[in-house]
Amino acid sequence: MSSLTMPLAVRVIRAEHDALAAMLRTVPLLLRAQHEAGSAPDFGALRAMLFYVDEFPERLHHTKESQLLFPRLRALAPELRGVLDDLDGDHAQGELAIRELQHSLLAWEQMGEPRREKFEQQLKVYTARYLRHMKREETEVLPRAVALLSPDDWADLDEAFGSHQDPLAPRPGHPVDEAYAPLRQRILAALPAPFGWGPALR
Picture 1 (cartoon, helix red, strand yellow):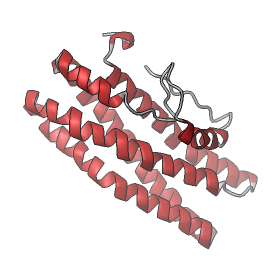
Picture 2 (tube, helix red, strand yellow; picture 1 turned 120 degrees about the horizontal axis):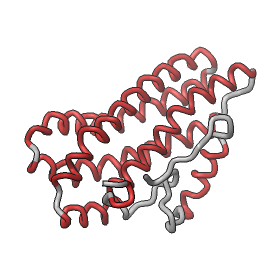
Picture 3 (tube, rainbow, N blue to C red; picture 1 turned 30 degrees about the vertical axis):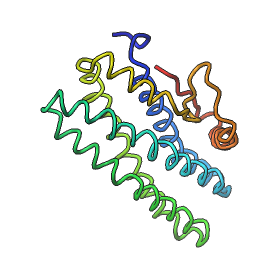
Picture 4 (spheres, rainbow, N blue to C red; picture 1 turned 90 degrees about the vertical axis):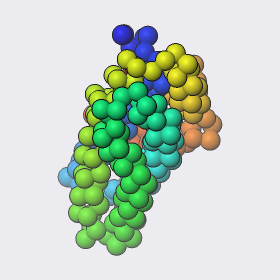
């Protein structure tokens, strides 16, 4: 099945994964470049990035996967239950993990360089876990969902996943909510070339 004929929900999930992965991979590069140049970290931009992760991937994206997509697959593919349980566990721990990362960033901002290393290490662990989580969804879950779910299932899922607009993964013809436009611009402005940015709905 080509990307153009994939259900909207699958394309939205993948686009949101792309957006988050691009940001998570870029932040350490940006921090390293700032450190090597002797410039101060842009704490405002970092706070905006972590707020985005909390507001969209953690609260909306994960919730819809756990409440709508995974239960349908559990009923049709018993062999996936272990994988789905692991992914649900990741989702359940995600909000706590992002809160801890936000606290660690605040500690660095308020306490100075002695707290940098802890934040960077926590970010490294968080990023590795998140990238592994998204890869499992894309390689182990989504192909089975495409193969097994009915048109009625996909109609429900397409409506659910299409009902929110991730500001870093906008769909063609669907402008970013004005309330989140400043957040989008704040994050994108902090991720200039050569780091690059370009998630697309695939």
